[in-house]
Image 1 (tube, each protein chain N blue to C red):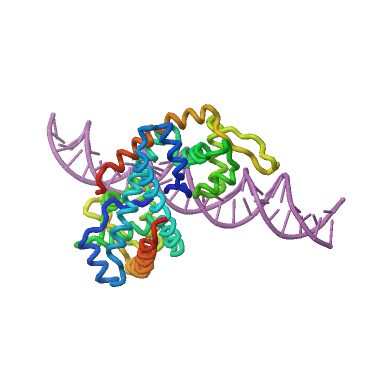
Image 2: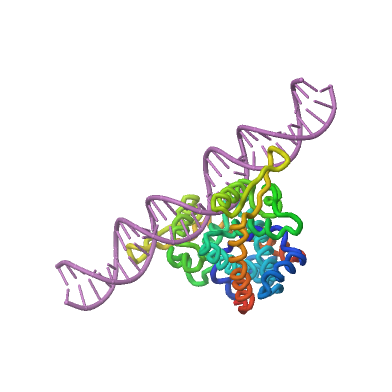
Length: 146
Length: 146
DNA sequence: TCCTACTAGTTAGGATCCTAACTAACAGGA
DNA sequence: TCCTGTTAGTTAGGATCCTAACTAGTAGGA
Protein backbone atom coordinates (compact mmCIF):
# COMPACT_ATOMS: atom_id res chain seq x y z
CA UNK A 1 0.00 0.00 0.00
CA UNK A 2 1.21 3.45 -0.95
CA UNK A 3 0.06 6.06 1.48
CA UNK A 4 0.71 9.42 -0.10
CA UNK A 5 -2.58 11.21 -0.69
CA UNK A 6 -1.39 14.24 -2.61
CA UNK A 7 1.22 13.55 -5.20
CA UNK A 8 4.00 16.13 -5.35
CA UNK A 9 3.15 19.32 -7.18
CA UNK A 10 5.10 20.49 -10.21
CA UNK A 11 6.83 22.99 -7.97
CA UNK A 12 7.92 20.27 -5.57
CA UNK A 13 9.23 18.09 -8.39
CA UNK A 14 11.17 20.99 -9.88
CA UNK A 15 12.73 21.63 -6.48
CA UNK A 16 13.82 18.01 -6.21
CA UNK A 17 15.09 18.01 -9.77
CA UNK A 18 17.28 20.98 -8.90
CA UNK A 19 18.73 19.07 -5.95
CA UNK A 20 18.95 15.71 -7.77
CA UNK A 21 19.43 16.37 -11.49
CA UNK A 22 19.66 12.67 -12.32
CA UNK A 23 16.03 12.25 -11.24
CA UNK A 24 13.80 11.35 -14.20
CA UNK A 25 10.87 13.58 -13.38
CA UNK A 26 8.49 11.90 -15.78
CA UNK A 27 9.24 8.39 -14.52
CA UNK A 28 8.79 9.50 -10.92
CA UNK A 29 5.48 11.17 -11.69
CA UNK A 30 4.22 8.10 -13.54
CA UNK A 31 5.35 5.77 -10.79
CA UNK A 32 3.67 7.77 -8.05
CA UNK A 33 0.44 7.94 -10.05
CA UNK A 34 0.61 4.18 -10.60
CA UNK A 35 1.14 3.54 -6.90
CA UNK A 36 -1.57 5.91 -5.80
CA UNK A 37 -4.19 4.68 -8.21
CA UNK A 38 -3.50 1.05 -7.34
CA UNK A 39 -3.66 1.84 -3.64
CA UNK A 40 -7.04 3.51 -4.01
CA UNK A 41 -8.37 0.44 -5.77
CA UNK A 42 -6.88 -1.82 -3.10
CA UNK A 43 -8.60 0.24 -0.41
CA UNK A 44 -11.93 -0.23 -2.14
CA UNK A 45 -11.36 -3.92 -2.62
CA UNK A 46 -10.33 -4.42 1.01
CA UNK A 47 -13.45 -2.62 2.17
CA UNK A 48 -15.60 -4.76 -0.11
CA UNK A 49 -14.05 -7.97 1.19
CA UNK A 50 -14.20 -6.83 4.80
CA UNK A 51 -17.93 -6.19 4.39
CA UNK A 52 -18.24 -9.87 3.49
CA UNK A 53 -16.04 -11.24 6.27
CA UNK A 54 -13.13 -11.79 3.93
CA UNK A 55 -9.84 -10.14 3.03
CA UNK A 56 -7.81 -9.78 -0.16
CA UNK A 57 -5.66 -12.71 0.81
CA UNK A 58 -8.52 -14.97 1.83
CA UNK A 59 -10.31 -14.09 -1.40
CA UNK A 60 -7.24 -14.84 -3.49
CA UNK A 61 -6.79 -18.24 -1.87
CA UNK A 62 -10.35 -19.12 -2.82
CA UNK A 63 -9.88 -17.75 -6.34
CA UNK A 64 -6.69 -19.59 -7.19
CA UNK A 65 -8.36 -22.85 -6.26
CA UNK A 66 -11.55 -21.98 -8.11
CA UNK A 67 -9.90 -20.78 -11.28
CA UNK A 68 -7.74 -23.87 -11.78
CA UNK A 69 -8.94 -25.33 -15.08
CA UNK A 70 -8.52 -29.07 -14.69
CA UNK A 71 -8.41 -29.64 -10.97
CA UNK A 72 -10.56 -28.95 -7.97
CA UNK A 73 -7.88 -28.81 -5.30
CA UNK A 74 -4.39 -27.44 -4.69
CA UNK A 75 -1.62 -28.20 -2.23
CA UNK A 76 -0.70 -25.43 0.21
CA UNK A 77 2.65 -25.21 -1.55
CA UNK A 78 0.91 -24.66 -4.88
CA UNK A 79 -1.19 -21.91 -3.37
CA UNK A 80 1.96 -20.31 -2.02
CA UNK A 81 3.52 -20.52 -5.48
CA UNK A 82 0.61 -18.66 -7.02
CA UNK A 83 0.43 -15.95 -4.36
CA UNK A 84 3.09 -13.50 -3.35
CA UNK A 85 2.77 -14.15 0.38
CA UNK A 86 4.93 -16.11 2.77
CA UNK A 87 4.26 -19.71 3.68
CA UNK A 88 3.06 -18.95 7.21
CA UNK A 89 0.40 -16.66 5.78
CA UNK A 90 -0.84 -19.47 3.57
CA UNK A 91 -0.97 -21.83 6.55
CA UNK A 92 -2.91 -19.34 8.63
CA UNK A 93 -5.28 -18.31 5.84
CA UNK A 94 -6.15 -21.90 5.03
CA UNK A 95 -6.83 -22.58 8.69
CA UNK A 96 -9.14 -19.56 8.92
CA UNK A 97 -11.03 -20.47 5.77
CA UNK A 98 -11.38 -24.07 6.89
CA UNK A 99 -12.80 -22.94 10.24
CA UNK A 100 -15.24 -20.75 8.34
CA UNK A 101 -16.34 -23.77 6.34
CA UNK A 102 -15.22 -22.42 2.97
CA UNK A 103 -12.34 -24.81 2.43
CA UNK A 104 -12.00 -28.53 3.01
CA UNK A 105 -8.89 -30.62 3.37
CA UNK A 106 -8.12 -34.18 2.39
CA UNK A 107 -4.85 -36.06 2.56
CA UNK A 108 -2.43 -35.83 -0.32
CA UNK A 109 -0.49 -38.85 -1.53
CA UNK A 110 2.35 -37.82 0.71
CA UNK A 111 1.86 -37.72 4.48
CA UNK A 112 3.48 -34.29 4.47
CA UNK A 113 0.98 -32.68 2.15
CA UNK A 114 -2.75 -32.16 1.90
CA UNK A 115 -5.22 -31.27 -0.79
CA UNK A 116 -7.17 -28.07 -0.20
CA UNK A 117 -10.51 -27.73 -1.97
CA UNK A 118 -13.54 -25.44 -1.99
CA UNK A 119 -16.53 -26.71 -0.05
CA UNK A 120 -19.98 -26.19 -1.61
CA UNK A 121 -20.38 -23.31 0.84
CA UNK A 122 -17.03 -21.89 -0.29
CA UNK A 123 -18.18 -22.09 -3.89
CA UNK A 124 -21.43 -20.32 -2.99
CA UNK A 125 -19.69 -17.55 -1.11
CA UNK A 126 -17.33 -16.96 -4.00
CA UNK A 127 -20.13 -16.98 -6.56
CA UNK A 128 -22.05 -14.47 -4.46
CA UNK A 129 -18.98 -12.26 -4.10
CA UNK A 130 -17.75 -12.13 -7.68
CA UNK A 131 -20.48 -10.02 -9.32
CA UNK A 132 -19.90 -7.22 -6.81
CA UNK A 133 -16.17 -7.61 -7.20
CA UNK A 134 -16.35 -7.28 -10.98
CA UNK A 135 -18.77 -4.38 -10.68
CA UNK A 136 -16.46 -2.56 -8.28
CA UNK A 137 -13.53 -2.97 -10.65
CA UNK A 138 -15.61 -1.90 -13.63
CA UNK A 139 -16.78 1.24 -11.83
CA UNK A 140 -13.27 2.08 -10.65
CA UNK A 141 -11.65 1.61 -14.04
CA UNK A 142 -14.41 3.65 -15.65
CA UNK A 143 -13.59 6.63 -13.47
CA UNK A 144 -11.07 9.16 -14.71
CA UNK A 145 -7.63 8.76 -13.23
CA UNK A 146 -7.18 11.78 -10.96
CA UNK B 1 -0.53 -4.94 -1.56
CA UNK B 2 -1.95 -7.25 -4.23
CA UNK B 3 -0.63 -10.74 -3.90
CA UNK B 4 -1.55 -12.57 -7.06
CA UNK B 5 1.59 -13.57 -8.90
CA UNK B 6 0.13 -14.94 -12.10
CA UNK B 7 -2.72 -12.97 -13.53
CA UNK B 8 -5.57 -15.06 -14.87
CA UNK B 9 -5.04 -16.56 -18.30
CA UNK B 10 -7.32 -15.80 -21.21
CA UNK B 11 -8.91 -19.20 -20.70
CA UNK B 12 -9.65 -18.42 -17.04
CA UNK B 13 -11.17 -15.05 -17.93
CA UNK B 14 -13.35 -16.58 -20.61
CA UNK B 15 -14.57 -19.14 -18.10
CA UNK B 16 -15.49 -16.39 -15.64
CA UNK B 17 -17.12 -14.36 -18.38
CA UNK B 18 -19.30 -17.36 -19.18
CA UNK B 19 -20.38 -17.58 -15.54
CA UNK B 20 -20.68 -13.81 -15.04
CA UNK B 21 -21.54 -12.19 -18.38
CA UNK B 22 -21.76 -8.70 -16.87
CA UNK B 23 -18.03 -8.88 -16.13
CA UNK B 24 -16.08 -6.35 -18.22
CA UNK B 25 -13.17 -8.54 -19.16
CA UNK B 26 -10.98 -5.70 -20.35
CA UNK B 27 -11.48 -3.60 -17.21
CA UNK B 28 -10.69 -6.58 -15.00
CA UNK B 29 -7.55 -7.39 -16.95
CA UNK B 30 -6.38 -3.77 -16.78
CA UNK B 31 -7.16 -3.52 -13.07
CA UNK B 32 -5.26 -6.68 -12.21
CA UNK B 33 -2.27 -5.53 -14.24
CA UNK B 34 -2.37 -2.17 -12.49
CA UNK B 35 -2.50 -3.84 -9.07
CA UNK B 36 0.22 -6.32 -9.85
CA UNK B 37 2.63 -3.82 -11.35
CA UNK B 38 2.16 -1.41 -8.46
CA UNK B 39 2.67 -4.20 -5.95
CA UNK B 40 5.93 -5.23 -7.56
CA UNK B 41 7.17 -1.66 -7.34
CA UNK B 42 6.05 -1.44 -3.72
CA UNK B 43 7.95 -4.61 -2.90
CA UNK B 44 11.09 -3.13 -4.37
CA UNK B 45 10.61 0.15 -2.55
CA UNK B 46 9.96 -1.60 0.76
CA UNK B 47 13.13 -3.64 0.32
CA UNK B 48 15.11 -0.50 -0.47
CA UNK B 49 13.81 1.31 2.60
CA UNK B 50 14.28 -1.72 4.83
CA UNK B 51 17.92 -1.88 3.76
CA UNK B 52 18.26 1.64 5.13
CA UNK B 53 16.40 1.06 8.40
CA UNK B 54 13.29 2.78 7.14
CA UNK B 55 9.87 1.85 5.78
CA UNK B 56 7.53 3.37 3.21
CA UNK B 57 5.58 5.11 5.91
CA UNK B 58 8.61 6.44 7.75
CA UNK B 59 10.03 7.66 4.46
CA UNK B 60 6.78 9.39 3.53
CA UNK B 61 6.61 11.19 6.86
CA UNK B 62 10.09 12.56 6.23
CA UNK B 63 9.22 13.49 2.66
CA UNK B 64 6.01 15.37 3.37
CA UNK B 65 7.88 17.55 5.85
CA UNK B 66 10.83 18.00 3.53
CA UNK B 67 8.83 18.82 0.43
CA UNK B 68 6.74 21.54 2.05
CA UNK B 69 7.65 24.69 0.11
CA UNK B 70 7.39 27.52 2.65
CA UNK B 71 7.67 25.80 6.00
CA UNK B 72 10.09 23.54 7.80
CA UNK B 73 7.69 21.80 10.14
CA UNK B 74 4.25 20.22 10.20
CA UNK B 75 1.76 19.32 12.90
CA UNK B 76 1.00 15.62 13.35
CA UNK B 77 -2.51 16.35 12.14
CA UNK B 78 -1.14 17.90 8.96
CA UNK B 79 1.02 14.86 8.36
CA UNK B 80 -2.04 12.67 8.85
CA UNK B 81 -3.93 14.83 6.32
CA UNK B 82 -1.26 14.28 3.71
CA UNK B 83 -0.90 10.54 4.24
CA UNK B 84 -3.51 7.88 3.90
CA UNK B 85 -2.81 6.25 7.26
CA UNK B 86 -4.64 6.37 10.56
CA UNK B 87 -3.77 8.80 13.33
CA UNK B 88 -2.23 6.17 15.60
CA UNK B 89 0.18 5.23 12.85
CA UNK B 90 1.27 8.84 12.56
CA UNK B 91 1.80 9.02 16.32
CA UNK B 92 3.87 5.85 16.36
CA UNK B 93 5.89 6.71 13.27
CA UNK B 94 6.81 10.13 14.61
CA UNK B 95 7.87 8.57 17.89
CA UNK B 96 10.08 6.06 16.09
CA UNK B 97 11.68 8.70 13.88
CA UNK B 98 12.26 10.97 16.84
CA UNK B 99 13.98 8.16 18.74
CA UNK B 100 16.14 7.57 15.68
CA UNK B 101 17.12 11.23 15.72
CA UNK B 102 15.63 12.04 12.34
CA UNK B 103 12.79 14.20 13.59
CA UNK B 104 12.64 16.88 16.24
CA UNK B 105 9.65 18.26 18.07
CA UNK B 106 8.88 21.71 19.44
CA UNK B 107 5.71 23.01 21.01
CA UNK B 108 3.00 24.42 18.81
CA UNK B 109 1.05 27.50 19.79
CA UNK B 110 -1.57 25.27 21.28
CA UNK B 111 -0.70 23.01 24.22
CA UNK B 112 -2.42 20.18 22.39
CA UNK B 113 -0.23 20.32 19.33
CA UNK B 114 3.43 20.15 18.43
CA UNK B 115 5.58 21.08 15.48
CA UNK B 116 7.47 18.20 13.89
CA UNK B 117 10.61 19.08 11.94
CA UNK B 118 13.55 17.34 10.26
CA UNK B 119 16.76 17.33 12.27
CA UNK B 120 20.01 17.92 10.36
CA UNK B 121 20.55 14.18 10.61
CA UNK B 122 17.07 13.59 9.21
CA UNK B 123 17.87 15.87 6.31
CA UNK B 124 21.13 14.01 5.67
CA UNK B 125 19.50 10.60 5.75
CA UNK B 126 16.84 11.74 3.31
CA UNK B 127 19.37 13.33 0.98
CA UNK B 128 21.40 10.12 1.02
CA UNK B 129 18.33 8.03 0.33
CA UNK B 130 16.74 9.96 -2.51
CA UNK B 131 19.21 9.30 -5.33
CA UNK B 132 18.79 5.53 -4.89
CA UNK B 133 15.05 5.97 -4.59
CA UNK B 134 14.83 7.90 -7.85
CA UNK B 135 17.19 5.45 -9.54
CA UNK B 136 15.07 2.49 -8.44
CA UNK B 137 11.93 4.11 -9.81
CA UNK B 138 13.66 5.05 -13.05
CA UNK B 139 14.89 1.49 -13.54
CA UNK B 140 11.50 0.00 -12.75
CA UNK B 141 9.56 2.31 -15.03
CA UNK B 142 12.08 1.69 -17.80
CA UNK B 143 11.39 -2.03 -17.69
CA UNK B 144 8.67 -3.47 -19.90
CA UNK B 145 5.42 -4.10 -18.12
CA UNK B 146 5.11 -7.91 -17.99
C1' DT C 1 -17.40 31.95 35.76
C1' DC C 2 -18.37 27.33 34.30
C1' DC C 3 -20.55 23.85 31.47
C1' DT C 4 -20.69 21.58 27.10
C1' DA C 5 -19.01 20.43 22.68
C1' DC C 6 -15.13 20.06 19.97
C1' DT C 7 -10.21 19.26 18.65
C1' DA C 8 -5.53 16.97 18.99
C1' DG C 9 -3.21 13.31 20.07
C1' DT C 10 -2.43 8.80 22.49
C1' DT C 11 -3.45 4.21 24.25
C1' DA C 12 -5.50 -0.47 23.87
C1' DG C 13 -6.54 -4.44 21.49
C1' DG C 14 -6.78 -7.06 17.42
C1' DA C 15 -5.68 -8.38 12.43
C1' DT C 16 -2.24 -9.45 9.02
C1' DC C 17 2.13 -9.63 7.36
C1' DC C 18 7.18 -10.99 7.66
C1' DT C 19 11.70 -13.91 8.71
C1' DA C 20 13.84 -17.51 11.22
C1' DA C 21 13.63 -21.65 13.37
C1' DC C 22 11.31 -25.89 14.06
C1' DT C 23 8.93 -30.73 13.24
C1' DA C 24 7.79 -34.42 10.37
C1' DA C 25 8.23 -37.19 6.38
C1' DC C 26 10.50 -38.68 2.24
C1' DA C 27 14.44 -40.19 -0.96
C1' DG C 28 18.54 -42.26 -2.12
C1' DG C 29 23.12 -43.99 -1.50
C1' DA C 30 26.61 -46.59 1.77
C1' DT D 1 18.99 -51.22 6.83
C1' DC D 2 20.06 -46.62 8.23
C1' DC D 3 22.13 -42.11 7.72
C1' DT D 4 21.91 -37.65 5.46
C1' DG D 5 20.00 -34.07 2.85
C1' DT D 6 15.73 -32.31 1.09
C1' DT D 7 10.88 -31.04 1.07
C1' DA D 8 6.33 -29.60 3.26
C1' DG D 9 4.29 -27.35 6.52
C1' DT D 10 3.91 -25.10 11.20
C1' DT D 11 5.26 -22.39 15.18
C1' DA D 12 7.40 -18.30 17.40
C1' DG D 13 8.34 -13.64 17.67
C1' DG D 14 8.23 -9.13 15.90
C1' DA D 15 6.64 -5.20 12.77
C1' DT D 16 2.91 -2.43 10.99
C1' DC D 17 -1.59 -1.43 10.21
C1' DC D 18 -6.53 -0.71 11.76
C1' DT D 19 -10.81 0.91 14.77
C1' DA D 20 -12.56 2.28 19.12
C1' DA D 21 -11.98 4.39 23.25
C1' DC D 22 -9.48 7.51 26.06
C1' DT D 23 -7.01 11.97 27.96
C1' DA D 24 -6.07 16.66 27.74
C1' DG D 25 -6.76 21.18 26.20
C1' DT D 26 -9.66 24.85 23.91
C1' DA D 27 -13.71 27.70 22.74
C1' DG D 28 -17.92 29.86 23.33
C1' DG D 29 -22.38 30.69 25.20
C1' DA D 30 -25.51 30.69 29.65
